[in-house]
Length: 286
Ligand code: GLN
Image (tube, rainbow, N blue to C red):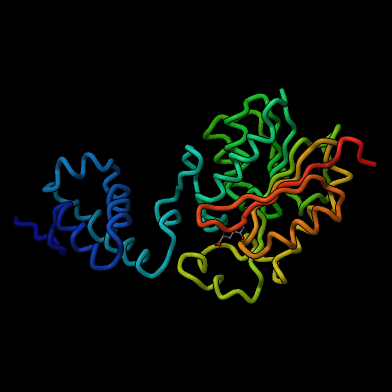
């Protein structure tokens, strides 16, 4: 008996060449690594290995979904962030490289504190909370999100990383929880895109949870909620640190100042736009 494959078999090299008509070289390669469950070195070493009868149609389907705009992270179910490999689903925002700068700044602000108490509000996949907890084993980190689905992704990530200094809490901003003694750092990458911004319909972004992207209003509601929690949740000397849009720096600084934070400082992203703002609760705060 002669068996005939329904689809012609192709080599890894031929599959890559086909994919590059539809998507860029890097995504084509990363999807092939995912399908073949191997690293780039193996693809280069053995370009003539045939994809199995199951792998080739699976690869074609993923390449076409990527070509239609689905984020690579959702297709492969993971994303790298601050040296961590995180599970990612369409219930959470795909971690962005610029948010790694927020983690780096948070770590600078916590330097010199032996066992800082930290809360990450709107944690999503847990990216910020877990990166901080991993870098500072003595820190106690609370990861808060309003979405139970997002929290279960964050929980999977915490458990995979084996971090025992992270607690998770389902809440809207500060509703219904308090850390006794107060926090040394409140950090957040909240939904900040204004509801009318066409960016919400853009490549990749339109597959992400709206709840994580926009407040459905002017994009500043999260910052108002965060500023309102300063006196009840931040220790004197503690910091409120956020990521924001490229044109929101003045508005966020205004909210921080009105909340009594001093000093208030901004930092730029790699394109030179102010994208993060930090404010400190004065030591002698009333
Ligand atoms: N930086 C994201 C974007 O521009 C938005 C993230 C957010 O709203 N927190 O797609």
